[in-house]
Amino acid sequence: MPIYVYRCNCGLRFEQLAELNAPAPECPTCAGTTHKMPSGFSLGGLANAGLSRDHMPQTWRGLYRGDREYVTRMQRQWDRRQRFEAKYPELAGDTRPVLAHEGRYHNAPLRAGERRPT
Ligand SMILES: [Zn+2]
Image (cartoon, rainbow, N blue to C red; front, side, top):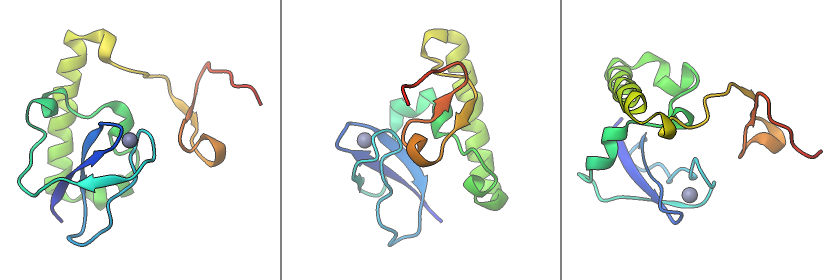
């Protein structure tokens, strides 16, 4: 499966493995509609930051059952992100463990130490 670059109306660009004719996925940030960028488009400079933790695959299924090429690619992204965060700790983002990510927390996972009105 090739990796495509998608762009959302909120401005987010992200990469995702997808079948050739698969519909564009929803935006991981705002759940909005995304559009596939023309093939050959690269995240370029943006990719130097690697994927944020929230965009890293959280499960084995997310790693496409261990497809070696994809895992290697993610590993590289992760390494790059670690170096990036070591250099700019303020950009590391929220590293608290996610406690809940289903139901009403689907779009905004509940983090450890966080309180939300019920
Ligand atoms: Zn979005």
